Length: 176
Image (cartoon, rainbow, N blue to C red; front, side, top):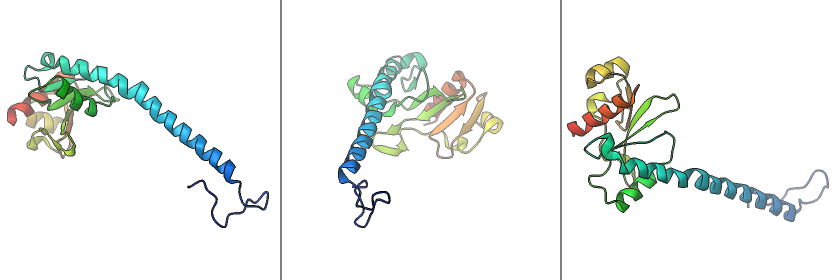
């Protein structure tokens, strides 16, 4: 309907009302491009991500004996929906509390997994005393080398190394 001519629209070149069929063709092409973009995202990103998430889930004991921390081979993949589905398929108990992955700068993130269907409620957040603290101050409070930050809401933190990020998750599990 956004492509339909306005009730009072006149084409400046023809001095007539715009051709509705032409507008329909343009709208149809836009929808086709949009659909192709979504399909490409699903086929080239979302579907392949599931295998990465499943590998991480199935090897979670190699990351931490609690089984509540997973490590992704790379960051940026869409993992949340896959994780919820795969936890059910593989009857994971206890549920995953933290995921570890690298950011675009190559630093490690520790991110809390949310309660399914509740985007802002974590299964377990990072410790309260870490929240909003950065760098050396955080490393000192946490007792973990290489800490870079902990978000004020406690849903994500960072460390310079994988081992440091894993230790942040482990300490959070211990403090619950």
